[in-house]
Length: 481
Image (cartoon, rainbow, N blue to C red; front, side, top):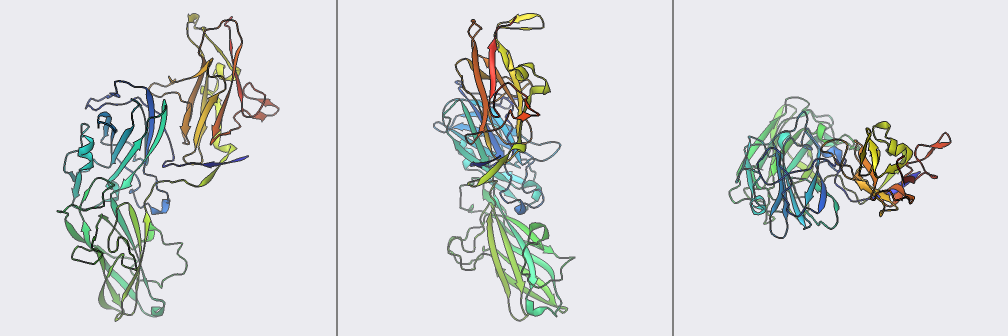
């Protein structure tokens, strides 16, 4: 069976973990809300919508600063600085935080911990929302390992359980230069010896919503020498090999805004040096002046520019065609398919008695001692695809039964809702009231986009869990005897 799922997302994996943190610099911060009534689960994601836009490590991060503010008064309920991820870089990070029931503003700054970056205010856990919005950053160059990314998201806290995604924006543009020669030069040897990017910008505002440049922004020229594979081929008709890994040169820059729409001394362009049959020639060309009416001559942040540059006759011209691609994270206003092999429900640790029998008790006996609380039917549930699909567990009798929140693994809560990821979730179901001699039952099922999943199918004529159909599991409260 295939289920068509429509969803809006910015993420591949979603890890509901850890109770966190306050606006202090303690090693183990906690949420500082004084009226915690909701659980905010959010995912910071840099996973690109188009994987082919990533080059090197510019789609991941090695450090992260996180902040949660009340929108109304700017009060910081949570902050966390992670100066280094080990043993590897990340494309996503999730957090589960107790918050008060006011609309929140979430800020995230990725790759902030870089000796080549200087912020107008040093990144610290006690920065205010106003300070974050006015930050500027400076550097002396760019490296794919430390591309600065910022995410900002307003999140209404309108229920006890809120899921949010924080898509990150790269504060740089990247230019991928692909060099070819005109078809008419098939018999000529044309070799590129260097590509120079003129007016690379070294300073920017850290607010992703800004379209301005600092008045004191510094510019520099960067030359990429072509020491191998510089001999050009004719412009191909098949562009399938036009991918970042095959670019002759790539450059990063902070946004360069030409507000007048006319070239000036700060306008970015490329200068190419090439040999035609052993004779050196130099060409120059603007990057975004091919009929654009918006942002003409400018380079915008969070954008990859595919620059197809073709050298014509040495006495003629450099022909440039530039295509901008938004460097957006995984998006979705599209349909995706959930297949039965994408999800699996099992007893927690493979043998939980409550899950396999569908029986919970209140009170119950543990290691010979009576406990005046509920036992649980404990499950492990995984949904691995499609990326960003949201699942929800439901009980038909929410008066007599409830989902537990204390996970079996310290620091990891049990949940009743989540987003597709590789790791499994824990789902716990217990009774809300002590046994009084009255039979109590509920059905438990899981949906994606409102459609039930087959979590209890027939296998060789039997079902793994109590129930009489593929989608519902029967949970019963009984008296301990």
